[in-house]
Image (cartoon, rainbow, N blue to C red; front, side, top):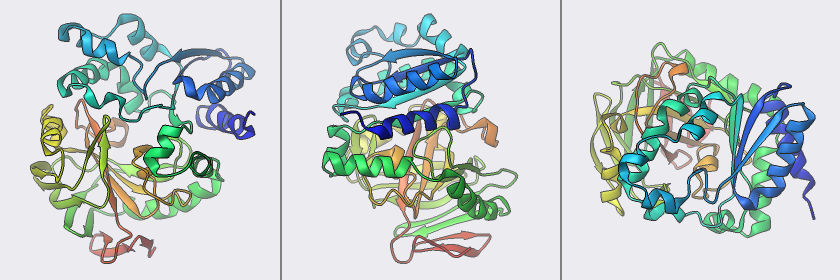
Length: 361
């Protein structure tokens, strides 16, 4: 039976996130298992008098076939396909719905190949990173996502819809009250187990995501000054999953804004390969603060985990130019830190504003 929440989900994306206008060409990408939501999205776009350009792919957000990525000569992989490149450059809005049947399908891809592919399309996707075009990335509940989260399928679906279908006007007001304190500060200090890291947002503002490019929303984020990160941070609280590979016990030490020492308990070689893809991969492109109370547990699912209330995330790599960032890289890797643990805190210019995951402002 169709889930009535899918129509609400689709209308939230089309009407409230994208605000689709008549005549727009909207690129709608997704996986086969997301068909109920993809159909509702196309219907919602049609009711607004716009074109829905449906593009179905097999795995995650990657539009290309994994078999093609493995087989194609590297020199061709480095050249964007003109037809697909034109779609990304000219679409009036974009939606990407991930509904994987295997969350680790891309884990066997060579690091150089996936980095080459991402670098090839970076000029095209820059308009997304700069928020020059409205876009939404979201997920649809599948057994694979539920299993990764350690939940049954129905429980995962309830969590997903509960995190997405919220009173976003009220959530936005609440998050903006906290975010304003960060905008007024010069230095941010993050303290926790194995962690004492200082960052600067001097001259830059945080952006509130209470209904924007990512669903679920529920965070505020900004771009640290590129040479400001000093100290150490441990991401041992949660495993990191990137491009289908799981890395545990990540520790990073920063000097002058760059990672000068990196280690991990497992898959350390992959961690080092990834941050050596290019010069920008060792610098921070984003600091984000999770604020969504509907996300109550870690799920090995960055789209949700980074919004979890009481967490922060740091992204290695590409930054957002509309928020003042100037770091460029083929990667944008969000790493989530749990600050709900005793002794954890966030300081702004020496004043504690969050203690053990609870706000004091």
